[in-house]
Length: 261
Image (cartoon, rainbow, N blue to C red; front, side, top):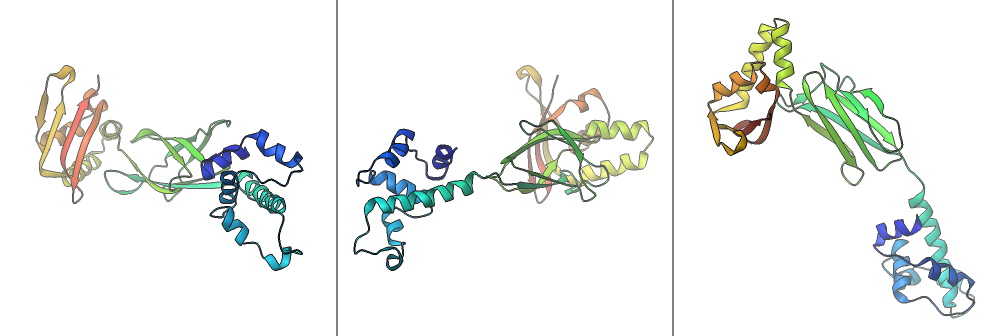
C-alpha cells in the first residue's frame, strides 16, 4: 500500500529490496539523491535540500556536523508518519440533489429511488429526501449508484473523490411514462400543462429532426408536431432517444433524435 501511495503522491517508486536493505546496512553512505528527493517530496518538502534546511539545527546538533545517515533516519520517520496518515481509511461524504432537466427544479414531488452499488457491498436501497437530495458516507473514494423514478429515466451515476462531491444531477423526464399516467388517469389538466411546458422549452423556430434508421436520412419536425409526438403515449415515444440538443437562453433551438427499434 505504501508503494501505491508513493506512486500516487509523487509518481515514483522504490524497490522493496533497496528500501529494507538500507536499515540493515551499517554504512554511512546515503541513498541516491533522486531517492532522497522522492521521499522528501512525499513528506511535503520540495526536495532533500529543503528537508535538511527545515531541521532546527540548534536543537538536534551536538556536533558541528550532523551525520548523513541520521538525517535519513529522521526523513524515514517523517515518511512513515506521513504514509500512515494517507493510508488510514477516511470517510468520504457525497451529496447529490436531483434536478428535473426540463423544469430546472428539484424533484421533490416523487422521491427518487436510489440503489448504491459500491464494491464489496450488497446493494443498498434508499430514496431522495424532501429536498430532492441524497447523502452517502463511505470509506471508498468513489460511489456508484442507480437512480429510478416513475416519471424519469433510469440512470447509473459514478463519481470519485477526485471530482466535486456535492453536485446537482440533471434527470431526464420519461415522457412515455408521464403521458401514459395522464391518459390512463384522465389527467387532462396535467396533460395540457405538460404541453405548455414543452412549448416554453422549445423555441418557435427550433430545428428539430429525426435520424431515420439504416441511413435512410432525416425527417424534419415543426415545433407543434414534435410536441404532439412527446405528448402521445405511443411505442415510438417510449423508444425516443435524444442524440443532440442545443439551448440558447434556456430554450431548445436545435434538437436531433432517433427512435430506437
